[in-house]
Length: 304
Image 1 (tube, rainbow, N blue to C red):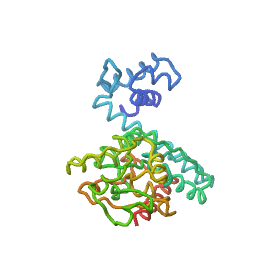
Image 2 (cartoon, rainbow, N blue to C red; image 1 turned 180 degrees about the vertical axis):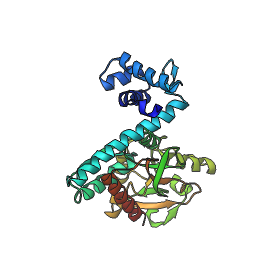
Image 3 (cartoon, one colour; image 1 turned 135 degrees about the vertical axis):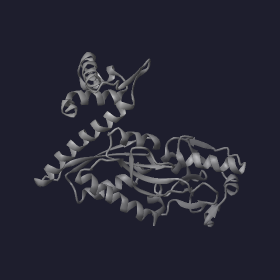
Image 4 (cartoon, rainbow, N blue to C red; image 1 turned 45 degrees about the horizontal axis):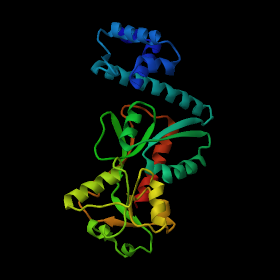
C-alpha cells in the first residue's frame, strides 16, 4: 500500500519545509544539504502523484495536498512523543516536557504561579513557555510547536480544539485611591477626563477599546502607549492615571489590593474570550492533560 511506502525521513524533511517555508532554511534546521531535502520532497511528490508545494519567489507554501499530508505527518510525530512519555510514566519515571504558547498577559503572573504549584505534585515535569501575540499562539499550536495554547480570541480557529472557553471582558485599572475607584462601572466618557495609558494596537484589549471609542465617537489621546504590560501597571501604580486590561492579567495585584478593577460599561467590551487550545485530533500525553485540567480549574477560579 502507498501509505506503507511513505518513509519517516521523507515526512520529517517535508514537515520541516512546511514549517520553514523554504528548502534552504529547512536544510539548516535539519543540518543536511538542500539537495537532500529537495530529493526527499520529490520522492513524496512522485509517490503521491501531486505537487505538495506551490513554489513562489519568496518561498514554498504547502498546496492543498501538502496541507493534508502535513496534518498527517504532524500528528504522527506528536503521537510518537506521547507514547514515549506514557511508557516512561508506566515505568514510574513521571517525567516529560509540557510546551505552552501564550499571549503576554498570562505569562506575567498566572502561568508562572500555576507551573510552580503544579510542579509541587509533578516535580518530574519540565516546561517550555513561549510568549507570542494572540493570533500567533494559535499558529504555534497548529504547527505542533506547543502542546497547549492559552490566548484571547474572538473567533474559533480551523484545526484547533478549544479545551476551555470563558469570557474575558476589558476592564479599567487604577489605584484604589483614584477618583473613579468609587464606581463599580464607568463609561468611556468618564475615563476621558483622566490621563490614560494604553497598549499598542495589536493587543486585543486595545482593539476592543478602539472599536468602542469609534462607535461612541470618543477620541483618547493616551499619555503613554507601550507594548509592555508591566510598564502600564507601573504607570498606574505610580499615580500616572488609568489603563485597561483583562482580569486574569492583573489578578495577583488586585488580590494584594494594589490595583482596583472597574467594569467599562460599553457595548463590545465583553466580546473577548479566553481559550485553552490544543491541536484537533491529537491525543495529549498524560502530564500535558493533567496540566491542562489544572489551568482550566484555575482560570474558572479566577473568573469567580
